[in-house]
Length: 35
Image 1: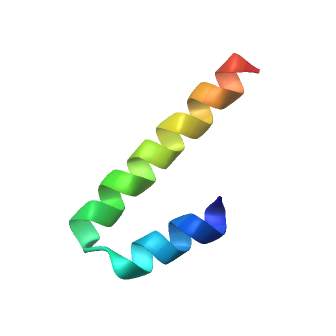
Image 2: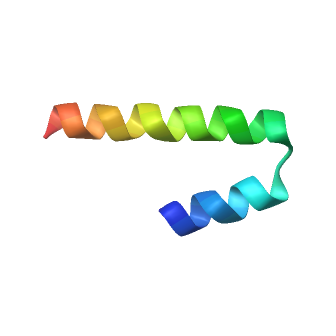
Image 3: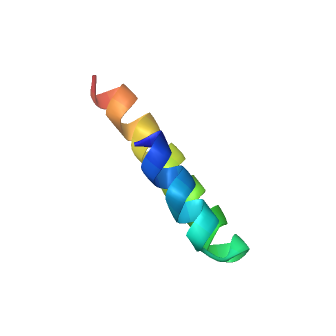
C-alpha cells in the first residue's frame, strides 16, 4: 500500500498528492477503528 502511494505521489501534482495522503490517512484511521 505504501509503495503504491509513493508511486502515486511521484506521478501526481502536489495538490492531488495532498488529497491522496489525506484520504489514505482517513482510511487508515477508519480501518483501525473498525478493528
